[in-house]
Length: 428
Ligand SMILES: Cc1ncc(COP(=O)(O)O)c(C=O)c1O
Image 1 (cartoon, rainbow, N blue to C red):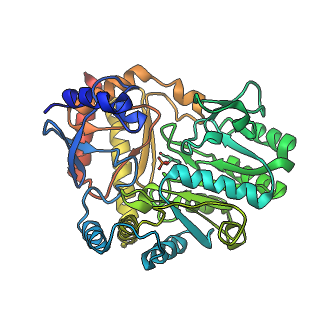
Image 2: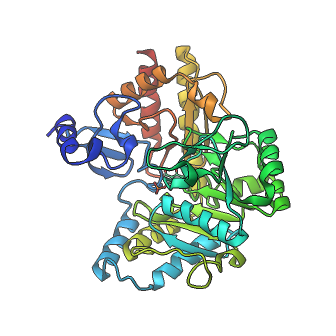
Image 3: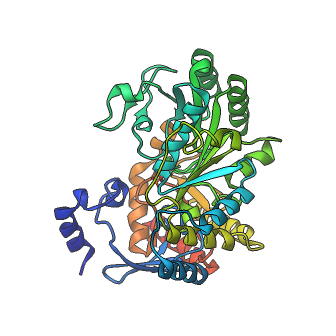
């Protein structure tokens, strides 16, 4: 069985042959790899070829694939029942574990996908404040809810245009799209719309335009403006939560900005350990507006699923072992430093950055600070590099605007082999 024949067959029954667009390799060209199995830091495709995996299911697999303790917890849960549609003790345990690690939140609601979590957080912010508008930033992705599929309109602080067919312009009329890391644009938007703003949603370290940090002065000003105008600051930590640090990106910014905390947080990926599970969380005062206590409706047949919660709970327990994040941070840093050094030796402009187990690199001279600069980096070179690495058994994200992920299962030898592959790829 070949990847090509599976892809051909898949396209007969599944639109584009995939169930999520980026998997189709459209950005880089070529045939997607159909994955047969995974273990530790490795994936094997349908042709039996092994890859060192730097996607980790787009973030969740922080322990690597098939961690024995997680496998055991999931197998035990499966035997007890797949789904009850009634509350379970494990949901409380997972909620308590999340709240222990995220001091900005006092309550958390579990859902099944990041899309759902972000969409529900916005509804809650609107219900809580009684205001309609929200700000998001260019290059940040918060799932595919209608109101979030927006790109900037012409001129600052104008309303956005839908980025997807099927989203009527009226549905995005309350969404304001601003450039990332631009304090002047932010101040202008608050000046114009401050009294109508329910919330500002941001990826604190954006992983959907490769890897772009919010600069500290920008974050400080964002927090001030939200507080001043009584708009909620919503951190989308679907990618960064329990991934860049045990306390997520908010703990990273709290180190730089004393007393810093978002109002609401959105989680996904790592909290499910590879199972469909996500969450949104915040202070009790806000969360009590959710049904059944309050008027903001939100529900889900499979929310808090017993198998998914078992997987997420064991994953969260494992990442709290002493030294876990120190080791993950160090191996991710070694990878990025190695890629930069390999490029320097090959005379290729490449810069990289990482936090905890999340990283990014760009074929550019300096780290981009916003979406337009990311998209202006060398796409052709990225695509060539991607395929050269894939040929050498290294599975990077198949688009230059995606972040990468290292797991605790990646050994020093895996990282070294990756850097060696990059040396060859960059010379070719
Ligand atoms: C920051 C961020 N928010 C939300 C989402 C949507 O999550 P999901 O794909 O689980 O719906 C993603 C997905 O990659 C994400 O990266």
